[in-house]
Amino acid sequence: MINKITVLISDDHTIVRSALRVLLETAEDIIVVGEATNGQQAVEQTKRLRPRVALLDLAMPLLNGVEATRQIVSEVPSTKVLMLSGYTDDVHVRQAVQAGATGYLVKHTGSQDLLRAVREVAQGNAFISPCICQRLMTTWRAMLNGDEALGNGNPLTSRQSQVLQLVAEGYMSKQIAPMLSLSIKTVEKHRQSLMQKLDLHKIADLTRYAISNGIIESGAVPNTTR
Image (cartoon, rainbow, N blue to C red; front, side, top):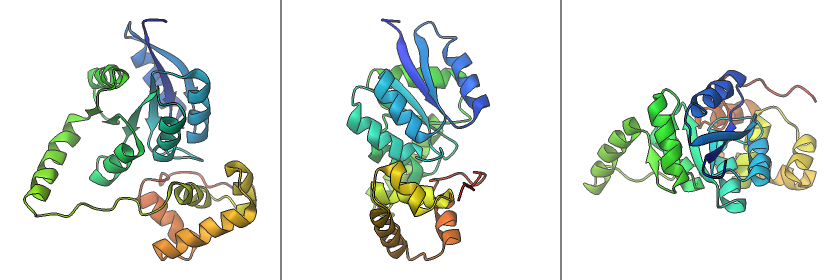
């Protein structure tokens, strides 16, 4: 194991995790040391196992991949994050990179690209799926020519994004407070400020915003333990 690239797999779908494990462990230089089913577990497991590479799904329950990346990069800088996502648009790629991800790989990528991405990221080198790189080159060229303005990405703070995700997943403030180690009053303040910032005042509107921005998946099952 000393010379192998240690990897943590984080995805809320059991079948996906199993497939990734089988694929990664076909390589003699890679070993999967753990799995996580949501963003919070990903952060906890990364702190405990300290893998060289954390392979994170972008859309995960409780804490999405972008926010999990922020925490991992801050708390375990030796671990490199490789984002695995079904989203290929510029906004999601930019959010992942801004959060500190070293690589961004689309889910329909080939097995060789996945293995190559893990190896490159483990060395600290950036890796972005070729299909995304091609489009980004076109976008950046247009911006340099003055045809487009750079977007602002997610206007929310990291904490507001965490609260938004949990609210959209169906959790109440009294449930969110202990999950984020905050008081109920503080959670309510974050909730109010993000509503004002987004000019959204209904839970349904917040949920639609969270889905459209990849914070939660459209097929996610809402929390019902109220």
